[in-house]
Length: 110
Figure 1 (cartoon, rainbow, N blue to C red):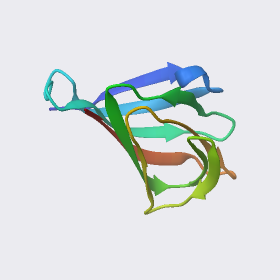
Figure 2: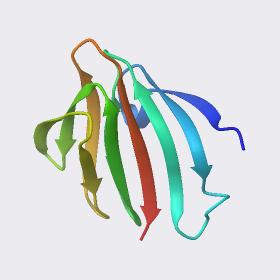
Figure 3: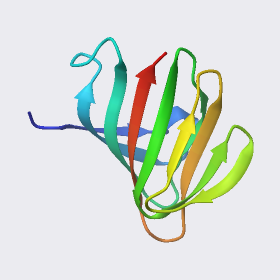
């Protein structure tokens, strides 16, 4: 199956746009997976603050560096690092530096 490419302007209220390369959709794994995608965010863009209710999300950074807001705690994340946002918590992410940020996102239903 070919991945579906989706460009989302102001994703979760963030700046610019994010490009989602959907690898598995909710229709393919409806009981457990809400999203599985490779996401690219270019410098000057971001995925804005959002909270998770009824699901949790994992980010795995493939390339680029990011500023990551982990439920109010700011930190930098690098290639090979993973973040985890549990049900009831929130996060946001934006590239740091001149490289695009590319990461895998997986949202699992609670």
